[in-house]
Amino acid sequence: MKGNRLYKCEKLCSRTAINGLFANGRSVVAYPLRAVVAVHNSAGEPSARFMITVPKKKIRTAVGRVLLRRRIREAYRLNRPLLLPGLACCGCHADVAFLYLDSSIADYAKIEKAMKSILGKIAALAAAAGKEEADDGAVD
Image: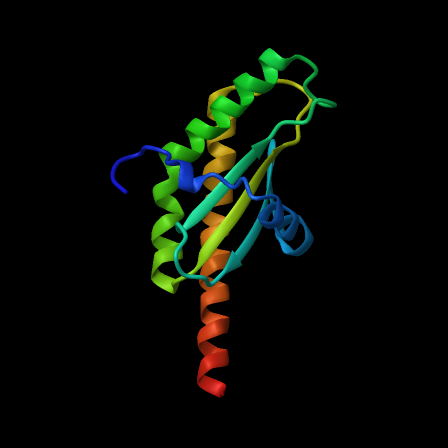
């Protein structure tokens, strides 16, 4: 896949995958975003699948929720290169759910800063998971 385009196969939409993500995933926080991440090894899927959630309890108007989803999606799309090389080098795949935490609408700069921080943390988690699997394979 070339460029910065987001493809359908990169969206996390399977109910089973989402339930597994929230049941077994690890949480990473960079205010105003929280990411729930599940790193795993499996063939045939893209390196990272994601979903975005903006709770109605925090942002009451649909216009505000849509605006925040667009800002979060754009921040992910532009900063995805921080994550993908880390996942590719260890042969891992990640499912990520981005949750918005603030009760007011944040500007794009604040969201992008949080996204960069989260993607760096996820890449470090993937590297650690890849290293653990390599160590487990060497012991057997």
